[in-house]
Image (cartoon, rainbow, N blue to C red; front, top):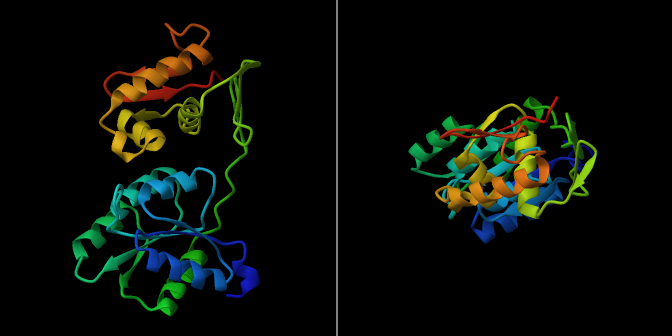
Length: 234
């Protein structure tokens, strides 16, 4: 694959070993790929909010959010190919990662030529993902993702960064029930999944700003004991 072909291909490398990320960034960049690096799963998910990789390469053993859990989270958002880096002898973790949505694995220590071949194979099998839209227009809502501005039924609404992130996550899944744990992990990080008070407070604040009658919401609906569902008002 030529450099001209690779130059628009984006690869996200996720590993807490600085030596590994340094080598992969240098080698993949030399091959013409656009490379970004995350040191754990949480950082990777944060990067993917505004940057769409064509391939994700992730280690399995990482702090905060390991590779298996990262595969699960990525699969909730995207079908981007995932290649896991597995230490020899960790077959159980490797199987868990494949079950969680990984597409392939390379065993450490690995040959760079082998990894490059695996990347090329995944790029051949999977069409390039579309760029995420810069705006969401649905029902009463008009949301500019780059300007981080929101209009509801023609009325401009000013949201805090977390309120905006919460609304965006729901607005990208209209009509679907999103669980408390999923929302907490997506907006506040994996360490916040057992702190539902965050969610109750911010949902209440968001409703005061977007709902005509916050006491009887029509956009941000509660699914008792489960989560929330966004209805844009078609």
